[in-house]
Length: 185
Image (cartoon, one colour):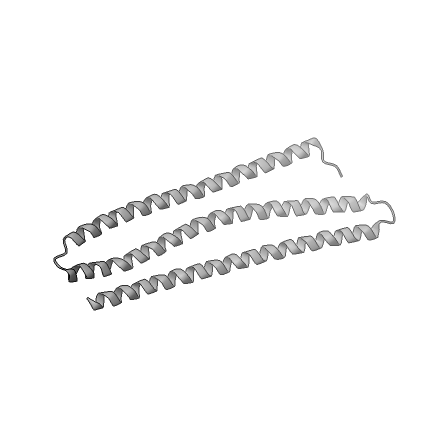
């Protein structure tokens, strides 16, 4: 089985469209990241201005310490929210790339299977054993690829669960520290 110029051209066009789609998704992810950072920077500046004004208005050290303790928990919560949002952007962009990769890999597997079948049909008499070995190797490679895909998905799921657990633990610890500091003052 040989490829015709039209098939090669169609394949190249499909690859260019895939590249354009992935580039668009990458830029969308970058835009979201920029928007997140601009929003977070504006909020941080506003918080800093408000905290500075409140500290300047403090009447004594006791009030200043209480103010400082009250600022810790919201800062920790905002940091955790920023990290969560950043993770969601990265995960969403990565998911789009993974979907495209899986589609293209599936298409490549189907094309290879078609090529193997075509070669098997056109193989000379007496080469059945070699064709069977080749088909077995292709099937083993496909199975290995599917196993790797499943392992990567499981690893991503574990990483997401760990990220969520760490975020929740950090937020809880910040809340506890803030409450403890508030009680001391």
